[in-house]
Image (cartoon, rainbow, N blue to C red; front, side):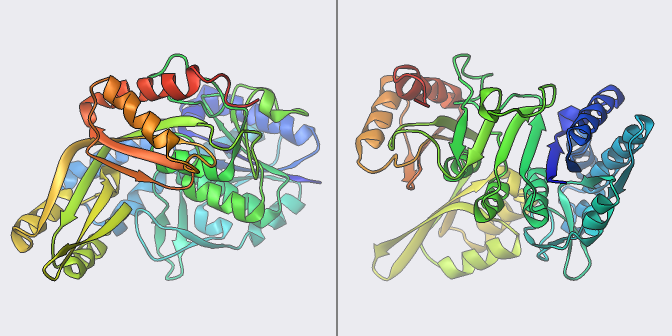
Length: 408
């Protein structure tokens, strides 16, 4: 039988009643003629609660021990869901990330999957069982428990779908797909029927609470179709984009059209005028992964750089600040109070028209940009954090609401 991988987020398994509803949906998928592998997140806000607990014990928790703690959340979900499926007459077995064959690099808290060895999963699917897998976690080549960072359950699901040769990967949550902006900020936001891999990846990198960027990377490499849907929705029909979002190689959109607006509230800017190599070595030692790095020569033999960092990637911000203030006094600085707002779309920077238009829209609202960066699919402005929602609404109105539907 063809294989389907389904992923259910924390809100979908937040309590026992919702777990039962998920189990029933899985059973309907099984009855439709599919072998089903399911990836689950931790229940509700469990991960945040565990992280908060760790912070109460230690201001800067050890990253290895943090992984041991945080990986417990998904284990609870997988066991309860497996039990629920059995109560409905199904046959299910639960596996941790390591039991499922999720092999990662040796980095704690934000590890990357380097290989999937799904032998046990394949064996159990062959026996007709539903396999329930703990998302967000794996095991390093040194046999250490690792976690994959925010959105890591998406990565688990898509990587497993690629390894199993699944027909598609269904990402289920409490929303019915990907929207042109966060509907809580922009009431006029519209669901997008189809997105390309690159557009989805850029939206994720820009802060949109959509699919995980590394998950989309796996899907792109293996050409796995991703269906982003509501857990409460029916099973995908002949046109899955009619009531959800389909992520695939090409989207039916005119190049240069803005597909969506995304924002990230908590970004920091690290700048240095000298000793660049020393500072980069420190950031590596602290496990700080930058989103963007811009290098510049200041003359007189001094090279410098500007780096954009997400605060959620800093698990020992206090120590980093102490190092910058002590070892790099007068050389490096850290700027807080900023947010990033981005517009995303294929071919968006073929000309400078969208850069000029976006900058003008921000100026109309009295929002100065303190920095800007572009890629083939994205334009990002750094602005004051307090004006972020205003910027999202203004750019959405200018690029999307006044320009008609994003998909012809």
